[in-house]
Image (tube, helix red, strand yellow):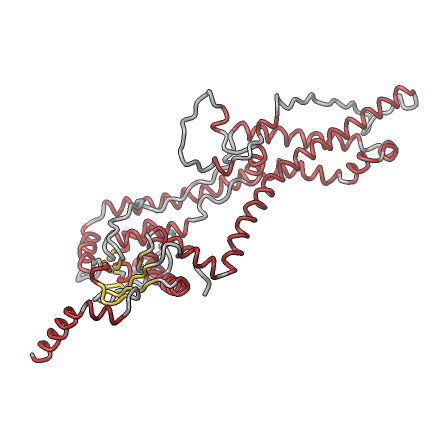
Length: 444
């Protein structure tokens, strides 16, 4: 079985001493997946297995276990190297769209200038004084101003500044403080956005559910879990709380029925922890973030629109000028090359403006669904806070199943850290007392 990155991260966050329940709750993983992944990781890094007197198991990992894995497995070293290479490649892909835009604009307007100069020279010679390009119309080229220095936008520290360690207050004396992207990254953001803001939705969902269960000592009712779920079903499916089945399956839960006929759920594995971690802060319901059109500043977006419009309009003007095949063939060189890729330039110009427009309407549609789901989950959270007697009776009954077991180092019956003979010698008094207790019970 391959190493699970989420399990390794959970072990590090939990200070390297964990139970299966700790890892499942921290990472939001299926109990069976967490258990198997922990066993694989513990075996590979020679972690210590600790068994309490009640039979609960904890794992203690060396703090340098990633170094052990890196030295042991060439695949892990290769994966880490590839991750670094991919970050560079993806950054190059991001900035390539801005570079292509500038190259397209340069090719279009340089070619237009060459064609106009050639036409002007021909007019002065008197050979083609009455020539008109593109069907006899007059060509008016807009005066284009790029600003004082367009490369002011080319700031390549986006990766470092997007997640700063210390936030600073924006002031007018530092106009670049609010720009989190350089020019090239802003172009990519304008075209394609900045990724799914809810990419970790499922991870957050299951972490939140596990945290709610642990905060209630491993015993809950469905109404406490429903604010973190999406579709609760309809009719009998909802009345019989079928939506709790994935939660029971994931965290190995067990249902029980109260004297009043209400269902409660308890999760033995999530009741066991390596240390007393206290209650974990968790939101009242799972809230999805709205999609944003772009993280670029308004100025960068306006610049992208302006350059995209310039590129598209320039391509249309260039198309009318390239209508004269004779002068194109006569000039050759750059003009002939641009003529050969003209439809590609025109398509790029149209796509540059069309893609964000389509994406804008798609985002509005997507956000409408997000708001709908958030609203439903929020209503369930409000209903829980205003719960009636029936739900409160279920919650009270669930407290009978609430428990918390801490696998402390002082209560271990066995650990792989020391030899078994040494452990038996150190615990001889405890073992003798246990045997005497059992003998007394057998004589009764």
